[in-house]
Figure 1 (tube, rainbow, N blue to C red):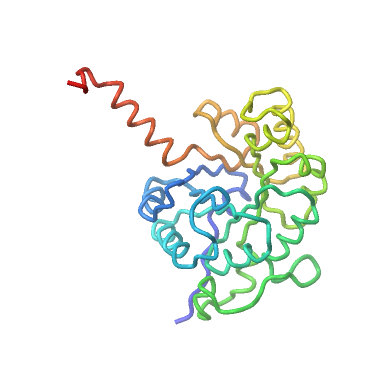
Figure 2 (cartoon, rainbow, N blue to C red):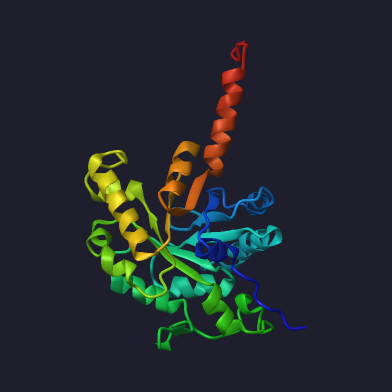
Length: 265
């Protein structure tokens, strides 16, 4: 029996003009990844830049991917670098949505995007053709065309260099989205942690408006539901609602706030 690649629900949602909502699982737990799918989220963000397994650790990554596949949630995997080796490895494992950290130039983005495709523009891509997990070990039908059709590669705009080259980055063929990183932008602009600083806010708005004008989907962090709703109004199409540890902290803090007895007695 020949397997047919399934569609990428995250890519389909944003290409249809919708808004995708997700959560950062910074516990890197397959059970939680699976549970987020049961809760109806569109994506689970697996940040391999700041934690978690290496994308070269096939066993750990496959456990996370199988959990996502069980409940139909799409993993959104931020890689530790823009190295095409990491892009190809993640895709061969079965990841279909990757985004790149700390990019500095359009040429760097172009190389990474090209490494995710078998064909690129009018010429060849730079993705290797083998029989990995993404191909169901050689059983998948329509593998090449299906992977090129369903794969989504985005970038995080969070450095001074990427700001300077923003228009050229947005013009890279097959760029799937830009994700705005206000915290690293605050560092790059000389105001570490001050994401409400006017310079940071100006940079965030510049990225957002330029991406919307270029027709490139925009992603970002939601800081409470009022902010999430406003971001959707402003054209954001991928919005992260929070994190596993952040959600647990809120719940546990609420429990402690409700305690009426002296825990020290």
